[in-house]
Amino acid sequence: MKSAKAKIIYFIIATFVMLASCGRSTRQSLSPELQHLDSLVAAQPDSALRYLPQVPVPDADDRYAYATWCLLKTWTEYRCYQPITTDTLVNKGFGYFVMNSDDHGRRALAYYLRAVVHEEMKVGDNADHVLDLMKGCKEADQCDDHVLASQLYHRYGLAMTDSDRHDEAKVWLERFLDRATKANSKKEQIIALINLSNNALYLAGTGGDTSVAIEYAAKAYHLALEWNMPVEQGKAAGQLSSCYSRSQNAAEALKYAIVAKDIDEMQHNLHNRKTEVVYTRIADAHRKLGNADSALYYARKNQYSQKLRTRKNATQIMYIVYRDLLGDNDRAVELMSLYNLQNDSMKREMQAVEVAKNEAVYGQEQEQNARSEARNQRTVMLVVLAVIVVAAVLTVRVLRRQLRKTEAKAESRMTHLHQAEARLNEVQQEMQSEIATLQSRLASDKERSGKLSEEIVNNNTLVAQLRRQPRFLTAEEWKKLESIVDSGYDGYMRRLDERFATLTEVDRQLCMLIRLRFEVKDMARIMAVSATSVSRQKLRLKNRLLAAEPDCLSSGIGLDAFLMSF
Image (cartoon, rainbow, N blue to C red):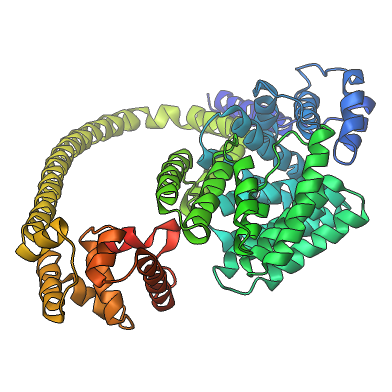
């Protein structure tokens, strides 16, 4: 009896060893055609696209060759801007290399293609695409495919820029430039320099040092000029214009904006550029130089642009020209309303992308566990089977008893867990309901308070007289008016004095009249000056506010709107 049991055990162990030795197939070779396609796609994508029909499709049973063909076909078509209507091939290549291979280059390509194809086909959300790009970058760090690495670092750097993580974006864009240089990819080098210039421009902030941004953009421009790449030269010229505009060098900004415009128009006419020509850079430069007509002429060229951001920029420039250069407040107000609508539309279209490091680490661990499980699945099953066969006779009853106890405990814990979860949901719903009620009451009370304050102020005898018949006020009446404004608008003048201590008495009077919603012509009568003088005084008031707090009128908000909401 013991001899029979020993034979069974020996048989199981021998079977386990034999199956484990062939548990994972070795890397298979590729056909000469597929190898040639692999050598072409990175450096000569157009040649790879022409050669692609000559590559025979591997048998699906040859999983390595077929997965390689799936990735290379998709990579070739994507590099040549061919439309991709399905992610079937990408998923097949991804499923094989990510789950069954240690080839970092192929794994990086799988992550990259899944990210860009799914983004193009609008499959999944931005967080999934960024996570794939991040994993692809980690794989690219361990391979020598500089073209693929540069593409991954570029896309991930842009993703960090879109999520306002500009310091991280700078690191990846610098790595993009390094890999593009190693790959001797001239176009990618210029694109990397332009992106680095834009990143440096953002990090410099308003009024900061733009020399680094200008240096990157100038280098990109001169390289494009030297390498005779007009499309990239136009992009670099546009970036240079933006840099000089930020540094308040309007003349240089206009110079390069015109260069970019001329190149873009030429490329557009030659059908080398599918997107529309941007004129807002020229319009903005003319605005800063005080050329109102020229600024309006170029801004109107993009007023009906297909791109919302371009339309918004054109509207903003026209608004500033009418407000500051032409003094047409009515038209400026119309444009400001349009700008606000466009800005709201843009905010609704933008999606915030957040990639949490904990989620990334968790995803990597899950991926590693899945790979390890797939790689060792047969081995683990055989080990478990051997252990179960050897120990089943001795442990079956004990296991059954323990299983019953464990199931009973688990069922009891699950019952308590469900009860606690149900109670927690009830409490959360009650709290949300109470919060919504309190918020509604607070909003209602705030609205009633505001209306009551406006009514109290407007019913004041002095204010009512001024609204019916504006007239010059005495010093005592000005003090009385200040008291009315302070009491009606929660210490308005006191708060204004505390925040802007440099305001003159005339500035303070003008602030009171703006808060009381008097028109310019009525302000002129009350202050005994002309309407033009009132407009000039408003401009001086605006400059004093900006001198005290440069960001107080940010986001294009006007003086009147700021003082009304103060």
